[in-house]
Structure formats: C-alpha cells, structure tokens
Amino acid sequence: MDNKTIAKTIRRYAQLMELHGENPFRTKAIAAAAFKLDKLPFVISPQTIERLGEVPGIGQRTAQKIESLLNTGTFPELDSLLAATPAGVLELLDIKGLGPKKIQIIWQVLGIENTGELYYACNENRLAEAKGFGLKTQEEIKRAIEFSIANQGWFLYAHVEKLADDIITLLHDLLPNGRKIAYTGDFRRKCEVVKTVDIIVEASMTELVEAVTKVAALAIHPPENASLLEAKNDIGVTFRFIPADPSSFYRQLLITTGSDGHLQQLDERLVEAQLPEFDSEEAIYRSIGLQYIEPELREGTNEVALARANAIPRLISYADLRGTLHNHSTYSDGVNTLEEMALYCRDELRLEYLGICDHSKTAVYAKGLTIDRVQEQWAEIDALNALLAPFHIFKGIESDILGDGSLDYPDEILAGFDFVVASVHSNLHMDVQKATTRLIRAIENPYTTILGHPTGRLLLSRSGYPIDYKRVIDACAANGVVIEINANPLRLDLDWRWHRYAVEQGALLAINPDAHRNSGFSDMQYGVYMARKGGLVAGNCLNTFSLSEITRYFERRK
Image (cartoon, rainbow, N blue to C red; front, side, top):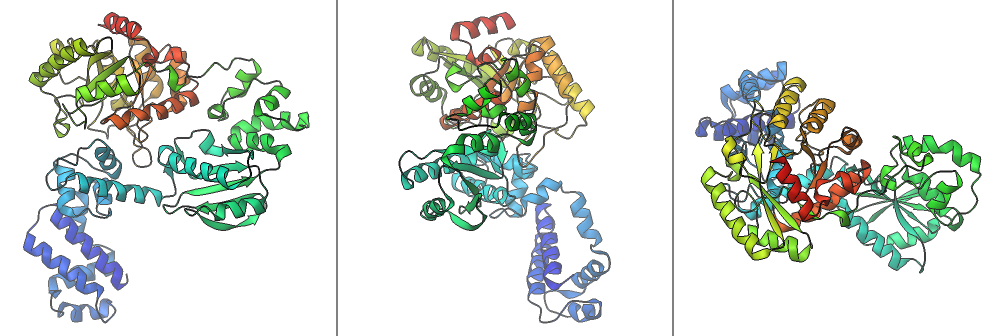
C-alpha cells in the first residue's frame, strides 16, 4: 500500500465511524489523521511505523491500525464497521455531495440502501422534504448519480433520446437537402439501455466529418476506417455515424439495425436474394418473402417465423392509450395535486381517465395514506368527478406487499377502491422461492387488480429481486390480475422479454407511468416502446380500454 491508499482507507474508516454515530471527537481525530497521512514527507512502511506514531495528529493507536493495514490489508475496527454496512450504502459514500450525515438520513430514516434506490427516490421527490436536504440538494445528488452512471459507459435510452434528436436535427441542417438520415443499431430497436447511439447517414466520410465537426457539442475521434465515425458529447455519450452510399442506404439500415440473432436468421436470405437497389426496408423484406418486421422486434426471437407466416400483428402505439393508471399526487410523495393531474390528463393529454394510486400506509417514507386520509382522498375524488365529467378519476392505491405476501389494509378498505396496484417496496433480498411465494400470495388476494413493477428492478443499478417468472405470470393469468409494464425509464418492469409469454397465458398488461408529477406522464411512451418490443397489441393492454370498458372491467373484478 502506498501513502495515498493508506490515507484513503483511514478516511473511509472515519466516514464509517460518522455514519454509525461513533464518538464525534474520535471520528474527527481519525479524519484529521487521514489528511495528515496524505501529506507525509516520507513513505509509510513497516520500518517507519514507530516514526509514524510520533507524528502529531496521528499517534500510536492510528499507527497500530496502519501497521495492521500493511500486514493484512485491513484492521479489526474497520472490518466491524464494514460488516455492519450494506454494500449499497458504501457506494453512496462515493457520490459527490453526499457525506456520512446525509447518508445516515438516507439509509436509516428513508430506508434507502443503494444508488439506484436513491436515484429513484430523487425522481419521486422524496429527498426534497427530508431533514437537511431540499429541492436544490436533491437535484445536485440526482445529477451526481447520472454522472456516475454515465462513467460506466451505459445510458438509459430515455436519457439520451433528446440528445440524439438534437444531433439528427443539426445534421439535417448541415447536409444537403434530401439526404437520408436514420437511427440504427440498439438505439433504433429502442433497447432500454444503450452504449452508443448509431446513426446512418447518406453521405461520404468526407462530408460526414465536415458536418459532424460543426456540431459544437461533439468531440470527434478520427475515423479508423471508411465505415465509421465516432464522436462523444460532454457527458460521454458515444455517437457512431455510418456513411452510406445512396444505392445501398436501406440495405445498410436493415443490416445495422438488427441484433446478431435477427441477422443470423436473415443472412442467408439476403445473400440468396442478391439484392438490387431498394427504396425501403419494406421492399427488402418483401423481396425475401417476409412481412415487414418493425425495428423494435428485430431481436432474434420468433419475429422471422411470424413474418414468414404473415402473422406479425399491428403493434400497440401511444395513440392507443385511453387513460393512465398508477400515479401519485401530493397525498403521498407526488408534486402535483389531484386536480392538477386530472386537468393535465384531460386538457393536455386528451385522455379519458386517470387512476390515482398514492402510497399505502406502510410506506411512511412516502407519506403513505392512513385510513383517514384514504377517506379524505375519496371525498375529493367524488367532488372532482362531479366537476370534470365525463373525464373520470378512478380511486386506486399502491398497496405494499408485506413480507408474507399480504396487503397492508384490511379487506373492508381494499374493497372501497376501484382498483388496487400491489407492489413490493421493502425486504428485497429474499431468495427466488420466498420472493415468488410472496408475490403469488399477493396475486391471489381477491382485491389485487394489478401487480406493480413485478421485480423491483432499477436499470443500471439494481437487478431486482429474483422471481420464477413463469409461476408469477401463470398466477396472474389464473387470478385475472393485470401485470404492470412500469414505464418509468429506470424500471421498464415487467421486462419486455416476458410480454409474449404473459399474453400467451391470457394475462392483460397495463402501461403505467408511475408518475409523481405531471411531466412524468410522458414516460408512458417508454412503456409503449417496451410493449412493442414484447410484441404487444392494443387489445392486450388494460389502459387502451375506453372509459366505459375499463369501468365495466373494474366493476366485474370487484
């Protein structure tokens, strides 16, 4: 260990002492010692330990810890604190702007144990009202986490979509009129996370370099060959530009869009066809005897077989959605009032209904509703429905699934809701058997209407609790429980890879934004993208039902 590593380890020990509320004077002394260690004029080694103990501000006790560090890589006091700290909480110590005092509140008061949960809490506005935080601090933490995620080289699709659209717009302005430009690769297939944004451009490499150089937000990497130009923006998103000859643009677009699995199924046909010039991808698929395959489906599953049988259905679109379910107002941890959300859905989004699903009583960190506040909310909904008709607000709740699979309200309260979204928010570390049994018990509850974010995953930060997908989906189908596609870009849960199985078993799905503010309703678009990847059609999605249809559905369920 060099001096810097030793100083960093002692600094981490001081942070953990503060996090666990140890003697504040001793904690400050250890933090000061870490600073001194980093500035020592000599190299720390077994031979200099005695000398180290004589340095003011370090002393014999700290020197003994460092001697243990040199010999074993650790010391007992550090091991004890590390063992008492969840791994995810340790990660929080590396986020810029977060010190042990704030992390203590995040962990011990808000119940947040990793970076993904913290980022999601920022989106839910939960930090803004916590002691010592506020809106400004919340936004700073959110930006710091986004920067940290970006450094891992992966990006949420939703976080780069606007950047990519801006680049496309600039390229259209910089290249001659009429030149074709299109997304391709993972980004065009609407993959939930991407490493690059690939763009195919009808231009030579010389024209492409000249145009991209003028896009001030991008730093170009010199092209290594004539087929690719890379550039990065200031947060590290890699844009890959592919020059294309006009005569082969659509063939290159088709080949660069598909996953390896999709291309393996197509490759032989493309070679056999000896493709001439085509004016669209549709024409290319048609020339090899296939129905057109939407980009989102080109993942190498069964899409080619379906296309060969002309059996690819019209996929769901955003325009098919008639209402929105699972949303949070100021009654729990939302930003907008019930009335503000209803008016936004009616007047701005032109929807027919809003489902409000504030947090239930167990979610005290999110101002979960006591039974008295449930009654208060129902009264306000009745008044708003009289005022806003024919637009309708449905009385819903996001009821916590407890550790044993039960819901956290008595039956007589659950019976009063129009619908119930049952979700797991705590005790996320069960094994697959316990987690699956827990969910199935909640699914079998006669008051459960929708299973919310089935695995609890947070993309790029938390994999979610393990479940037996088939058993859970089968239970939903058997009990008439709708499965949520949580459209928040951090969740996108249920994973699109299981949508087809759910439909085959006869289960309905619902695209829910889980909105905590009016701007959150736009996340439904990302849910639609995932539903399309899963092959979903409008008839398999609950919130494509009209107001009269979904009203009858909820009444039958009750």
